[in-house]
Image (cartoon, rainbow, N blue to C red; front, top):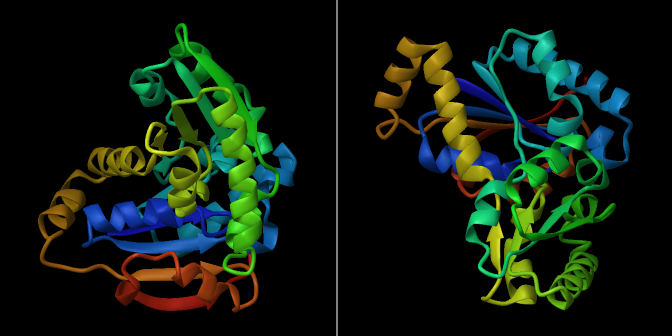
Length: 269
């Protein structure tokens, strides 16, 4: 079975890696929409129009489902994408529920892009689960974009993370929600800056589980066969980018199982 995974850049590879590790028999097509990045600076209408084009691309690829591995695209445009296709669509939401359950000091930070930070959906989730917790919603307009440009931007990324972490430590934060799929790519930098006392939550396992649930619901026979053969087969990973070919090297560096990459290509939406 072939699954489509998309993001504005490399961030969704955190989700792709989790899917491939848990279910290596699935074929994965990854789309990095670098030509339209950063998503965090686009309007809701622009993102909705773009996601419809992304959906049409994946339909041409004959995927069984699409994983929108981008918090910004999920909160801004996933309903529009769902209305434009019959394929199962799996989004990614900030993992605030487990964060509030884990926080011992009841002090939680949610780090997101500006679009996600200001979204009604994020604020609804926080109001639903926060109880008596103190919540700091933080955003960066540059961090995701700078991670995409790694390693040239390594020092800038480190500086941004240190500044954000200093702010969190000053607020006595003990649990951090990484509400952008780019951020887990540099999770170790957050761990170093925040120390062992701060739990860091990201959504890749939850998204993987939801993908499998949706596949079994939508394609019960095909999914059962594919998952039964999961351990004996190694699926292929195709990397697609909407920008010039130099972005491929940057994408490849974040793929855990680089041997599974079978195709690199630039596409136009």
